[in-house]
View 1 (tube, helix red, strand yellow):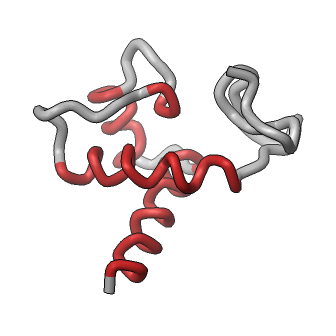
View 2 (tube, rainbow, N blue to C red):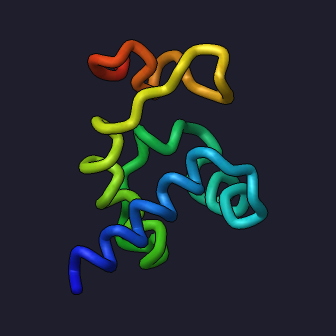
Amino acid sequence: MRDICNSFIVKRWWRFKTQTSLWAQFLINKYCKRSHPIGKVSTSGDSHNWKSLMKIKEQVEPHITWKVQQGNSSFWWDNWTGMHKVT
């Protein structure tokens, strides 16, 4: 059951990173005003949904590779080299 829940959280992380939905914009405006989502750490006052995204991002991000000129990627935070992120 835990694997199924984690797969849904991974799907939410992917949608958060790739889609400009109202939900994604809300989370960015609430939690990422001054920093990139990759650099964020959850705190005690954060929502359960945000905490679950912050927990799963460490497992998911090493497996995501961005292609240059194929969308909105961050030079510093996203893995566009195929090896690891720059920071």
